[in-house]
Amino acid sequence: MWTQNYDPLGSLWLSTAAAACPVVLLMSLLASGRVSAHKAALAALITALLLAIFLYVPKEASVVEWTPTMLAAALNGAAFGLLPIGWIVLAAIFLYNLTVQSGQFDVVKHSVAALSDDRRIQALLIAFSFGAFVEGAAGFGTPVAISAALMMGAGFRPLYAAGLALLANTSPVAFGALGTPILTLANVTNIDAHKLSAMAGRQLPIFSLVVPIWLVWVMAGWRGVVGVWPALLVCGGSFALVQFCVANFVGPELVDVAGGLISLVCLTLFLKLWQPRQTWRFADEPVSRERERPEYSLRQIASAWVPWILLTTLVLAWGIPDVKTTLGAADKLQRKAFSDGAEPIELHPTNVLIQVPALHKQIARDKPVVAKFEKEPAVYELNWLSATGTGIFFAAILSAFWLRIGAYDFVCIFGNTVRSMRWPLFTIACMLAIAYTTRYSGMDATMGLAFTHTGALYPLFAALLGWLGVALTGSDTSSNALFGSLQTITASQLAQPDGVLAHLGIEKAQLLLATANSTGGVMGKMIDAQSIVVAAVATGQHDQEGPILRFVFWHSLVLAVLMGLLVLYQAYWDAWMIP
Image (cartoon, rainbow, N blue to C red; front, top):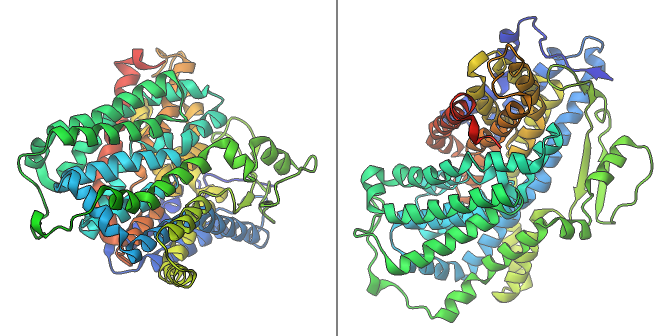
């Protein structure tokens, strides 16, 4: 048993600079555009391992003892990167390839264009409304993969298809995968999930109005925004209203599913009554002509959408807790019992729980990162049937029957998809290996502790800490598990009688700052390396992760700062908004 060392150099700022090296190296190599993503990820992983082994070795351990533990952490992360995350991306791209090879995706493109030829409207429909629905049902990279592939197929430039899918996948993230990030935050902080949901529901709806405008501004500038302002109001307004109401009065589970679906329906119906005066397309894009378009019947269009309806239905079904349990996913009590090892437990034959050798409960977090000494479990769940990617793969199988694709062609298309995905999957595995190495070594906590020294400005930096957590781990859920406890500890200190948040009291301060970790974190989703790779794969931009990162980075940072300013405002000037 070793306790993490959060200040190995004896200076918080020097230790923070050292801990940031793997992330800075990764982002720099990607942004340079001269190094492929898998090479950049491998270089950053090697750097993280060297720092973890030789700098972050606990005082009571030797390098020889510590090395297997850090290698086990990296392997655990790589395994998680392949299943469930890599499996989701592979299955989604496979389904997309099936529809392209069958020729039915051309019909889908036509049906989207029939609603509006305007690229601004298409981005709102696919990236924002439909993407939010998929985020609510599945999360973990699924909406980026599907939305980016759909926009690419619809005729968007590859860079814009990837960048806009990433930008749109922000405000829904805190309620993604049936509210998993908020529920995880509640579990870590012991704050009521409904209160956290309500607090997030009083921050994110503002950004749900802003993000659609931001999308169109990135594409077409302010004139483009003015040209479609009624559609922006309907799209963002309907989603924001549902997000506020469901988050505050129902709970976190169905916020995105309801909001995305209602936003999609409202915008579709609105387009039957209104169209922009001028159709906006990219500058070098050929102007489509109605007479050159093939005519498809309603039956043909409905048939072409069946694979995507199957995908949506099965992804939603696979996300329902009762269905996941039926398919073999372990519940919280089973995971805890297995982690503690107090008694044998019975699991579904399709599920295997593995206590990672040399890592499980070999490392402990301590104050001030957590409230009390806490052993870190390391249990890998090989739940191949209940994984979301399996639901998508079943949708691909059913789609193959519907599209009348033979067994030989089915296998060939799958083989080609796997071949084309080999380096992206390797990259995703490396990205998660980096995240797990920084987590178990304590490097992530070193970076997080640096934010707690900002005094009265901490509400701003609480959101930026969440942003950093998602950028590091690729998941708002993981960021909440990582920094949720640290946020509540810092809030308790700042809410003492002589603290800057004394006027809030400890309970409200903890609620505000814990929620800020999740709502600020959503803005980091567009720049985490895992999402960048997924977007690049979905749009066929292999080794183009650098341009995608440069496309979204400053948008991510500015939106995170704006969220931080909102939290700062609520902390000092509008505390009545805190439940």
